[in-house]
Image (cartoon, rainbow, N blue to C red; front, side, top):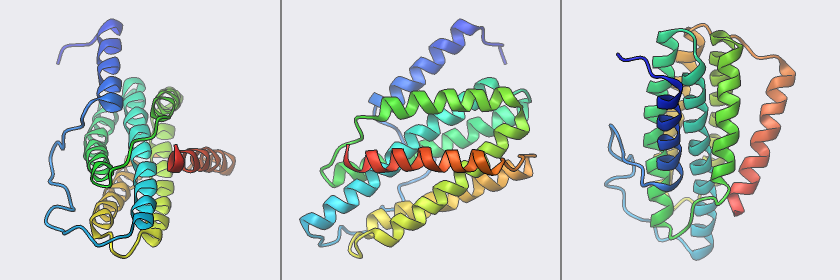
Length: 212
């Protein structure tokens, strides 16, 4: 495989950012989990709630794309880099599924997505520079926090919204797998202050993305 120089890397990362933020994501490997499930008879208020929750999850997937790309860029071991790129590919499915669901609910993506992407890319790159064990540990903790959010959202979804429920349940399975792979790959447990900081930052994003 040809080694990419800094200019090549810049072009590739810019292309990925533009496609994530402004393009139409393509489901890369799997069908949407909601395929074949009929749309429930939800009220306008229930649809608004579902849309807010799915907007948060879509913003989270935008952040995940940036995070994994930043970590892959600075990973030192080839197998770690490949693991990050594989995870980003699976997260792209989530990005496509949540965007499709937002469209079905006649709602919009978060206008703050460029901020989430750029911030997450920098965080991912810094984590990679600190060393692969810390980068993998960051992945594991991130996924554990995402799973917690998904559980909360599954509890808040209107009972009629089986389509959104199917998407979130599959996302939860995938996130748990990513966390397991990161730990088995040598990920170190992050210090409690770092976990608390990550949780606080996540709270800011989820609260903002629900409305904006």
